[in-house]
Image (cartoon, rainbow, N blue to C red; front, side, top):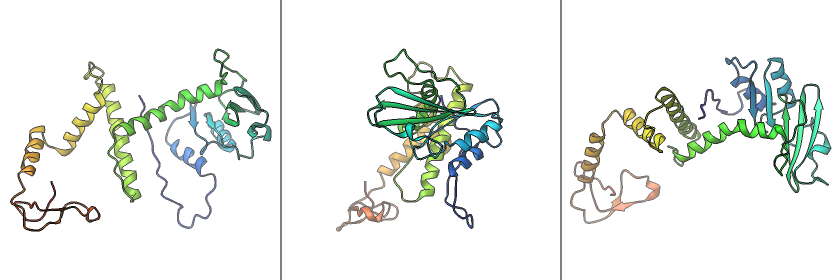
Length: 263
């Protein structure tokens, strides 16, 4: 089960900051502040990985494993070229404490990784794909990020909007709900152990707690809402609750304010 410890939201270039360089490297270092990461490993994708970041982390006794973009100057031409590369072949490159891997999963495709955790050119020969150990480690460690993304897609409070602060807020709510579920399961491992939809039950309980109402109160509110419509007026009018862009025109009116509302 994955748990998000720290987050950083990119809100644009800072005033009078000039042209930003090595943004991915700065993000990784900022997220590691306040964490005793010595002796641990950092796994990141190609937006963050660079040779300078790997060496700076090594000075703090932190290793790095990550995919790296093909346009990085530290990569030799032979490792980014797909010419005459056969599928399931691997090339290794070494420099001081860093190792670069170039793997060809299929024709005309290359995957490059940088690692300070590995030092030997090991390949998994038990499978016909013959993946290098670096890729196996990367897939195993990045599974936490993939699991988190999958969980937020399964149950999400996100709604379509053009306001980016709302997008950030929705994402924070989704991740906070997952973190709460992880903590709750750690403290109560036997909670609903015989049910397969424990996270959905936890979210329903969380929603009721946040609303501060009981299930009976919610049902009563729904029934009262259904009874608010009275006799329809002679002409249709736009619903005062819905967005005007939807242009929903109905004959029903609210029994309290006599304004037109949809079902």
